[in-house]
Length: 285
Ligand code: SAM
Image (cartoon, helix red, strand yellow):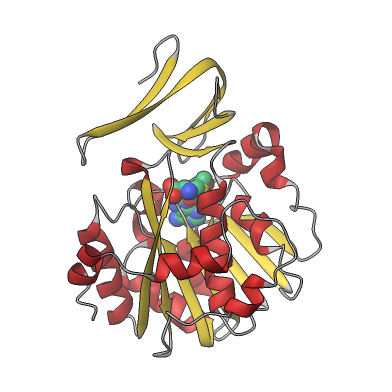
């Protein structure tokens, strides 16, 4: 809903909403998959909205992009090949490429229009797209994973919209089985797992489907994300083997030389401290 000076997103499921004061609407496009709108806000820079749901703002996207990339990368022993499903705003791609030891990052988003709009209105998120290690492609992530070579990927990052519309098929056992097959033995799957406050059932269902697909270790890491429902978001990491995902390369994270706005070793440790209701919901000790 947009009136002359504010854009609001109502979260019917949670009976809550968030709004950003706007200066004007900058652009919109109806792609074959979704409606993409761009607003200029008074205090949060530009705002991208897809089918009425806030995706990224200039001012506060770093929480999400940094946790979706650095947390799994520092959890993996030595990631070389990463695939991002979704991620069309290119922020997660940029963060992954900050790791000099990462050799290839493929970003497969179903909708080219998202990236074209990001190039125009969020150029800072696209600043690494020309990195020779990056491949920016446009296809259904479901098909991509069906065709991925077995044992070819170290980390799969599912940076998709909510589990409705084109993204619905990225949250089920069949997709996770294809991810399981495409990952190497010490591979990790990480997926944006919505708001733990509002959608703990969805997280439990995701982990159940990942477990049915063969994954053995799971960890949900909460983090703030102002423009998403309840302002508190999460990513869930799943391991093919049964390793303890509470362990990560914290010395490497502490010694990182690239700039972040949020992520560091202490923030990672903090995200691993499971709130009581999450422990109970996921039956963790
Ligand atoms: N951070 C956002 C969130 O948590 O909602 C996600 C940002 S990113 C813009 C979401 C992307 O998922 C969109 O660009 C959309 O086109 C993409 N997407 C949705 N379904 C997809 C699919 N089946 N395959 C590949 N990309 C998909």
